[in-house]
Image 1 (tube, helix red, strand yellow):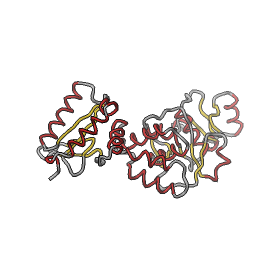
Image 2 (cartoon, one colour):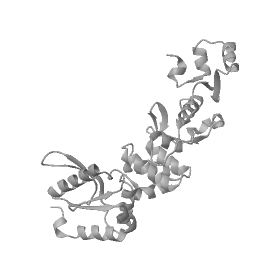
Image 3 (tube, one colour):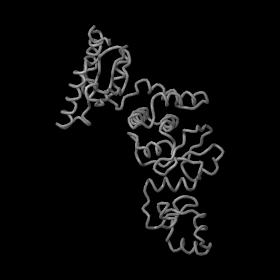
Image 4 (cartoon, helix red, strand yellow):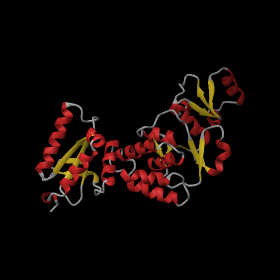
Length: 299
């Protein structure tokens, strides 16, 4: 396998030297159009398709080992909700500013051992750091919410981890940390619908439920994950959007798990998207009524 094959069709000047090509041999290939520049000091073979991923890889090759995919590009590389593959941006240490000019590159003075990871063969900021970086560069709050919720859902970050890192960066004057901490008030679920339910509870003074609780059934050992469980009670709440609950098979599965939870002594209430978004008073009243029933207090 050639160097270019190993590197997704990309080569650098040092690769040319390693391949024992003389300067005139390399210049001849450039003049013939066999190799085309894609970033300063980085070339692609003319048969290599230029796409978003190749531009990321080329940028990292130019910037070196202390650079990483950053911000909106990092969110897309991790596959976070709302992120699109139309931005190519990187981050380097602050002292590297002069080298960053040919590309869209941010600089930072603050690195933590967990801020940089390798994911799918590219250096990229961690999901936790990516969320905080999105806030620092002024990305819309809705997109930051989506990044938080999908990052938690993918188990690539967690609310306590984000809070800790936000607190660390806030002490150093990092922009956007206050916004992230505000958005975390209604985090912990795995979807926008679950976030809206948590906001309803908070705004109406209802105690916050525990999110994504795992139950192991005593009768058969089956594991059931529920959206919300209210501490000190037997109340479980599920919120059901259309995604993942549309087919007969999905509804059958949901009905079975609900019946199993009831059989194990839990009181289960379920709300749809329309309930949460258009009938919030009904949702709040139902939860409050359930929490005040004496027989729902956990023994």
